[in-house]
Length: 341
Image 1 (cartoon, helix red, strand yellow):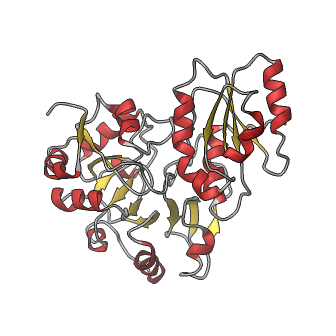
Image 2 (spheres, helix red, strand yellow):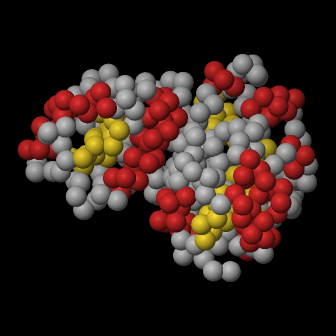
């Protein structure tokens, strides 16, 4: 099969056949586009790591089409886990379970005795899983370290020569990856924040806790995105503290250094500075965190492609609470923790 096909929903059978034959197929979800392969096929999964340039100890999420798909793999499903699945699936919530020994290759689990599972809220991808008869690994369909893809064009930009194709279903609706919740500990622990917040989870189960420890270079990550640098464009990114709003000072400093400036922020923030900067990508109209979360990866990718005309990007921040936790988790990584001070 030739590489880099751009399929429509009408081509689902062709994409499913590619999966069955051990090929890589990028698929849409409500969060970001995923790089799909048969999760039970060790050779195919290793091709996913190779295509992305992803470290092999960085575990993958397995995408399923129904709760029944868990049965061959998951050792035990608690009452709390069942309640969460019933409430949030299909949707942007990933649950980590202990798995039955030998049920999945170590390439899928990153060498762990646990695995992460999710049922995406996208009819195209649910159809791909059902038609292929395979559960799918599905890390973000981008080169590792780059901003995650929210369109089929983003996928082909990074991976065109390494995949059978991508199913184009337009821009994703959420724009950031799923919340990851570890169900192997009590109380369950959020390992990666996403659109489903701690408060959302606690409407269903009594308690969740946040993992607030940075993973050291020597330790093994339990969830995607915990250990390695993510979401970073080539252009240096600096955060502007939402509580200080020192945009003018930041722009004056960058101008004095002879830098070409990009802004990644709302229209309302950018408006006073349009004649002082070189480029702007709008995240929202009036500093709305949900809209900004949806546009963040597209904005980071935009400036990644402007690295010859832009020297520095200043990005808007929000309070680290609610869905702002997910936004700030990605922004901090894109900026390598740097604030303009």
